[in-house]
Image (cartoon, rainbow, N blue to C red; front, side, top):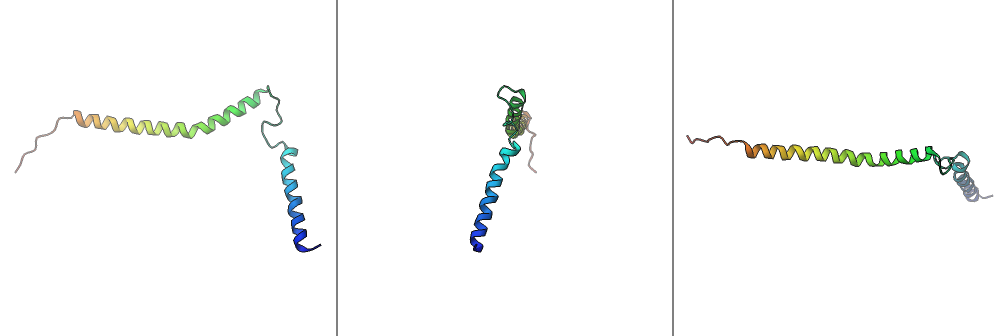
Length: 87
């Protein structure tokens, strides 16, 4: 065999093995579970919580920042200005 054909055959065999491994190992956490299993529901719920947590953190930080900013503006407006004298 030529060197190029041997390399192509090795890549093809390696690709086939890699493609077949997830089926052999049940790589997906929910693939081996039945439809009504509670573990599948818990896994899917935990994924949704992990996806939502960055958005919730960003919203909390943004809300706190906005609240502090509005409070400082309100305090600035309500404070009595001090008299400025020219010298």
